[in-house]
Amino acid sequence: MKSEFQGYFIWKLCMTTGDAKLLGSKMETVITIAIPHVGEHIFEYIDTPGLLKCLSVSKAWKFLGENVLAKRWKGKPLKACELGLTKVVQVLLEHPEGREINWNARICGETAWTLACEGGHTDLIKLLLDYAVEKSIDLNKIALCKHLEIITGFMMACYDGRSDIVKLMLEHENNKRIDWNATGGRNYRSAFHFACLNKRFDVILLLMDHSKSKGIDLNKRDRKGKTALLNALSDGQTDVVKMLVQHANRTNIELPIFSMCRHLKYSKNPEITFNNYPEKTDLRRSSRKKLEKIYLENGIYLTVL
Image (cartoon, rainbow, N blue to C red; front, side, top):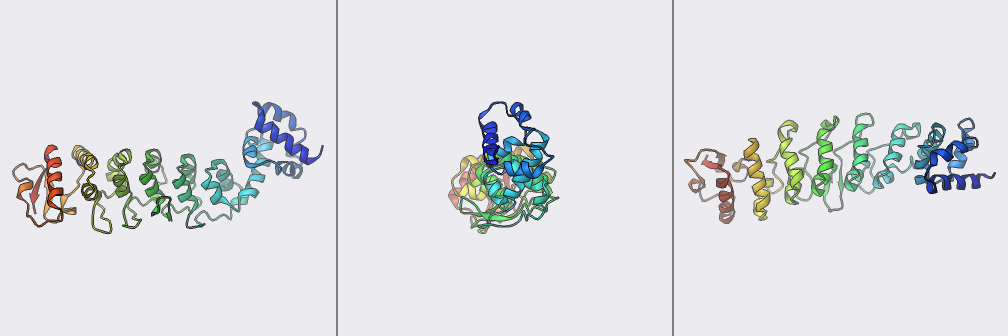
């Protein structure tokens, strides 16, 4: 049997049958770990999807398949991350052929981590987090994402509203390597800024709930000196402002007004309200009136500094 035919046979075996393991056991008489160079030569005729199926047939096939995958993909790990090929990336992380791979290398400004985050590949992101310490993967690298903002992988997840990925990052054991308050983009905004600007409500709640335990700065200022709350107010995003105020009030999280307006701080003292503060503030009158209504509705009052 010629190797070309063997490769074609295995391809048909793995891609068209419903029971690859059953038929695979018969093929082990031809493809065996005892003569690995012959097995690898045959496996080289199979494309990547076929090889991935071969990994589950037997230990011998897994060994041979991983060897071929490692040699085939060791020169293009970022491409594997872009395509979301989690199994291929896992082979590269664990196989001796992948020892020399620089997981922080850039291609067109992107790294393996930022490509995984931008693509929303949850399983791959978890895998890279698992190996972040062992492989010294930089989880704070910035890259130009599809939104034309130069931001980190964590910011990308918040920008896109991927609450499942954000939750994974917040709860993973290696999350100490992530800078939750890093800034990026044209206006040097944080992940919390991006979540609020794009009305990613599930992500906003996650970040607020973890703000104390993870040290997430909800009052981080952007290049223009605005917090996420002030940006939402300035853009007329009343629903976002209400969510921030109500959730902060329920969970006793401070969103100080003086971060937007130098003359004020908020309290729960009903004796002094919005009407008492000076006219010269950082907020336009229309914005102050909107914020006044929302705060008073939630039993929060302002005192003059």
